[in-house]
Amino acid sequence: MGRIERMRAGGSAGNRQLTALVAAILVLLLAIEGATLLRLGSLLTVHAFVGMLLIPIVALKLASTGWRMLRLIENMTLGRNAVGYLTESMHGAGSPQAPTVVIHRRLRTP
Image (cartoon, rainbow, N blue to C red):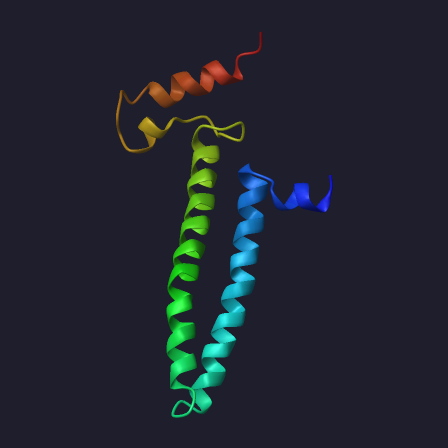
């Protein structure tokens, strides 16, 4: 897979790349913010500008990390790595026998 194709990957791989890229940008901008604190009087404009740049970057980082957490929870409850229970049984919806029925159905060999 070429470099451009890897950069444009979607799904989990694309989200992982986005999260890593945003983290690198965030570290850079936070380092600049910290450096401008040393001479805040003369660098107040730069400090304020970088602070405003941080807002959408932090929002994007929260969104991409939140998406990864949602996908993890989905895979744990409904995906191929599910341990035998449905989301409904996790919060009390349905009969108490529902998880047992699901486990027996999944363990039954054809």
